[in-house]
Image (cartoon, rainbow, N blue to C red; front, side):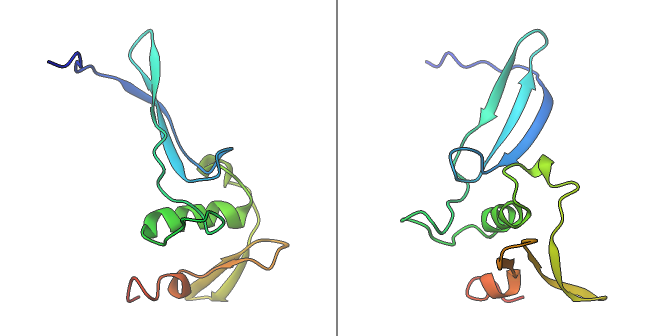
Length: 116
């Protein structure tokens, strides 16, 4: 028999972060009306620098690389960041770090997984 119960909660904030632990995760901060709690902390993606990295999550890789290119550790910190853009007026093919030679080109990264 479980001690779980069902409650209503209001989402106070939502973050996607690569934070201090170095992998992609997301968090919801929930308000029960007088008390609160966080929901999240699952590893959604590990970067190439980790020994057991595999590109198994296109969404995780996509979000992580955008954070990495912009030089931030949380989705809410993207606003106002400067990146380089490769493409033309009809299509952006890649975004790059503003000073490092680091580019995120989804068509190149996903060519083995997804036919774009």
